Image (cartoon, rainbow, N blue to C red):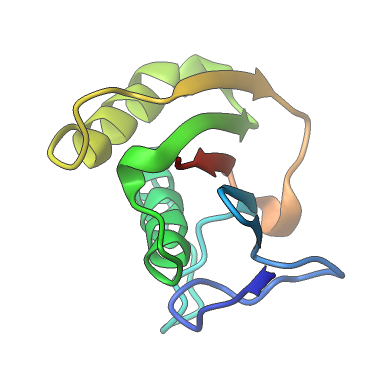
Length: 126
């Protein structure tokens, strides 16, 4: 089943925000676009936090919860900013879940709309 919410940015290509198949939710890579203002924050911390908020809005549209996220993949154009990414990531998740998801983080040369970060997520529930 295709998942869509106006509280996260519209896809900028031929893909769905997320796809749910029974107990699995695959969330496409989200970039830091504010769904209301359509603006992109300049700072890495703000971009990271906004991406996670966008992922959260997609999850809220389903019967999943943040604690159901089992894996995230982070793509960044500057791995030297990993401390900032980690701080935003921890700040976002720490108050909402008790166990952090498994995670990969890789540096890429470029991301859509010249953002600094993109995150995709996989959620699973019994």
